[in-house]
Amino acid sequence: MAIVAITLTPALTRLFPGCPRLLEMEAANVRGLLDALDAQWPGMRDRLSDSFPRIRPHVNIFVDGERSVLETPLRPGARVFIITAISGG
Amino acid sequence: MTKTLILLGTRKGAFILESDGMRRDWQLRGPYCDCWPMNHVIADPASGTIYAGGGNEWFGPAVWKSTDLGQSWTHSSEGLKYAEGEEPIKAVWSLAPSARGLWTGVQPAGLFLSRDDGQSWRQIEGLRNHPTRPKWTPGGAGLILHSLIPHPRDPQQIWVGISAVGVLHSANGGESWEMRNRGTRADFNPEDQRYPEFGQCVHCVVMAPGTPDRLYQQNHCGMYRSENAGREWDSIETGLPSSFGFPAAAHPRDRDTLYLVPLNGDIAGRYVPDAKAAVWRTRDGGKHWQALREGLPQTNVFFGVLRQAMATDRHDPAGVYFGTNTGEVYASADEGESWRQVAQHLPAIASVETLIVD
Image 1 (tube, each protein chain N blue to C red):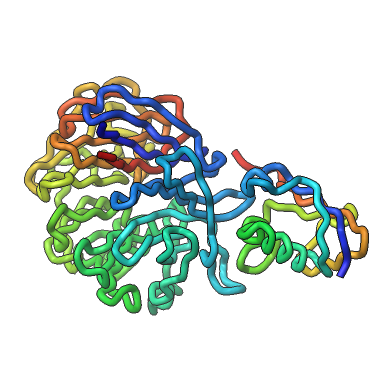
Image 2 (tube, chains in turn red, cyan; image 1 turned 180 degrees about the horizontal axis):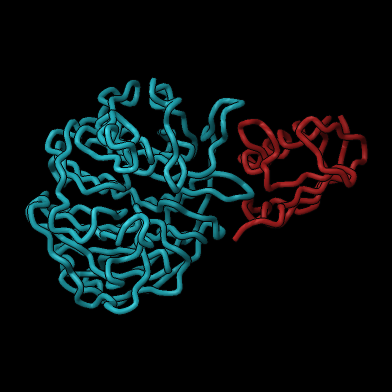
């Protein structure tokens, strides 16, 4: 398990009152990180990943600068950015 | 003081128009639900809770909920999912409160039930297990479950409408389902396959008040009435300007009165015929139709009205309301005799429902 630094998009945090944009959490991989976020803010996992399961197609989770998938491992001190894709209309 | 609310689901959030019992002046509130596309915004008349169902391209499907008439909202999608490996749910399309809970229809077509007021859901698997499902094909808006009609007295019975599959009925709470499409056409099929068991493009199904066996259906190919709970359908499109349209709205008390907004045709632009707005009303169960135009624009009108974007209220005389895909809302406080525009410049309107708070 690794402690990582996470930056969340405001499009996400506004859906979960009280959720900060910058935080640290402990997880072994991205899937575990979403589980940890969901434990603290119930429902957040469903916003970021679907039932397939995979990261939602219009959500990007960058780990140390690289787009990740649910199985991407997390190293201690990794920087994680959870952001929305340029899409909408 | 009585409040009358028009609940609007739009491409960019939920809105609420509020008036009193007279329904002359309307105040607009919104957008709510963080501007997510909302396909259906309804209220449970028993509790006054407002639910908004939709889906966001970034964050997926959810049902939003307000217990204070729209002032504050929460959202949830717990359990609103298919099994791993199946195509995930894209959006919520329809909501219906009932004695059993909150029925919820989704895209791709499936049915869920919430028994805790929109906190969590479980799938009604019987529908997706129907033997015809491998052959279901989507309509223009996708494979959507858009019409939800719980039986008003028997909690085991429910009808659903799925585009382009047809109408299905369950008599055992959703465990098993029967197709109910006999008599409805599929003009888009080869000539010798125009009346299949399923595959009809149902656009909207509503129940006549107090008469669960009488259903009305606006289809892609015609307008229909059933007197036997959907087992057989009879065409009632004679006298209408078109067999094509999306919404249908039943009168709150008179089973013979129904409102439609026919459009000019599926390959003709899908706007109001002759570019003149009209709501068409029958007072005799579909034998005769009357165009209601007073107060509606009659020149250069190229809007359409989507399948869930017309509703009545329970006042007497009944109010009738519709929203357009160009973001306008029209209201009648006299059963459709006269109309006024009560909102404009909104995003495309997907749904219109009403709530009266006494």
